[in-house]
Image 1 (cartoon, helix red, strand yellow):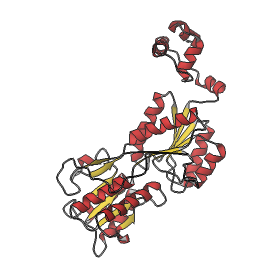
Image 2: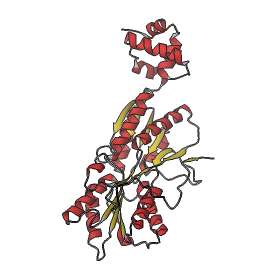
Image 3: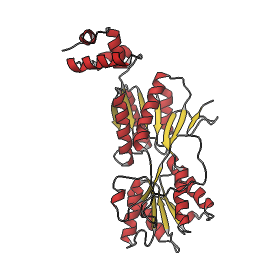
Length: 357
């Protein structure tokens, strides 16, 4: 079995240089780095990860706590996290919190006990126990997709990365209003989630920008799940004057809303127009094709990894919140021709990168 010394001899460098290349502990000239990697490949050298972790107190592993099973959107994020981790030589340990605060704490504790170097977490609607645990143990953490409340001075307590929510949602509403709709319903997500709050804010901003009144009866919660959205949509359709257009706040709830419409024999967009937050691979296969806001799922995952590695390299750096832009994907469920049109949000969202000062 090849050793690090064998790799060093083959590449014509010191053992220390080989260590720096494999562990990323110091910059190495590109041609030297490539020589080491070529020698590793030629000799079939496999680093002893356990021995290395005992020496460095690092396992080169990242814990990921997201509801990958119950939320299909996180599957795309997972792909970005995995690719980013592998690119930087990290392994990935995954736990599914099931969007339940109690299960969330247990999942994070389990990952921490496995001595991961840091964590990437999509927090639940009630992350108080999670925040207490992470703060008590000083676990390097990046919150993903959903934000947690800032400290009293307004600065974020943890690094966070998410997509824009309020502006794109407002854009969907103003797009539907521009098509003549005056009663636009929102099937919102689970109360307590930052994404739910921000999309409701965007919904109300969109109504105001279009000169439409806010009617609380047109806002229902589908709890971020298909079954909940089906019931919520049924409640909207039972109103004395139901909406003529719907905005659904995530991909799972879009499926539930479509099921409720189908069960009542309503067609989209003939009887009711539909726009959804979250694009998904089969949205283009529906009839009609679904007009949607597409979130940069893979980029969110990759960015979370980079932010975590930056935190590990500089533990005392100020915490920051980064927002990535979404893309309006125009199709036909909104009731207009299939042409690439992007609605302009009525208000600009906060800065993409808020740093503690």
